Length: 259
Ligand SMILES: C[S@@+](CC[C@H](N)C(=O)[O-])C[C@H]1O[C@@H](n2cnc3c(N)ncnc32)[C@H](O)[C@@H]1O
Image 1: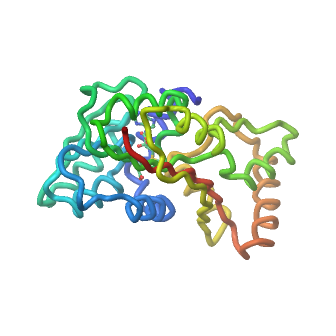
Image 2: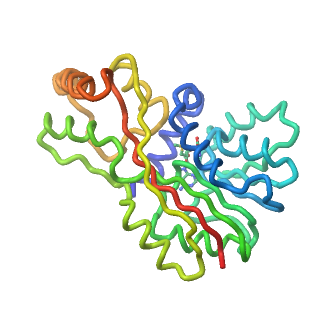
């Protein structure tokens, strides 16, 4: 798990640029919503790691009668969300808090959602957190960035530096096992999908990574000559597959309910 302060700092810095580069995150959110009974949920909904509110916003638009609690580690991400909400008919309750140390009442939610946020927290604890926080029969829909993500980026970097690039991201299979092992949860679907983000240039791809706050936090920075080589090799390798620079996201989805 990356250092929490670093994660918080990166997302706080990215708060004003995130939405501009978040097309792939929007696609992930849309898929998550398409498989969730949003309209029919009555009561309280919790969005974990809500960021600038891409998921919260869509859920609130589809289900105006429920109360949504939108929780994030970064005050700046929540501030961006608040500005966007100013003209909304109904606004979610914004709370700055840590998923690993939730300031919430147990058995209090009818639906828990989360998109591309849980991989930054203690993943072994997630099934328990979902169990504790959901009401009986409450639903959950989760999208978690998993270990196959940025495969090409890691390969090219490793080729240049000779250093193994640290990938803290959880494996789909071990996530699936930890959800299945939780007897109080009924898993209706577990899926793994790849989402591809394409860019006109390699510089645009690098800007997107920092503008989204998603750069890996424990790696050392490349030197100028390494970076030059990295850009050239990445451009060549990615063009072979999609004709342009791309980022690959492997996303694990879990849908189910508390028994
Ligand atoms: C990639 S963004 C996703 C935001 C939003 N869910 C979306 O789909 O656009 C990840 C968010 O998770 C938040 N986050 C990371 N670790 C967290 C933690 N331990 N507790 C709460 N939020 C966290 C970050 O601050 C960031 O806003």
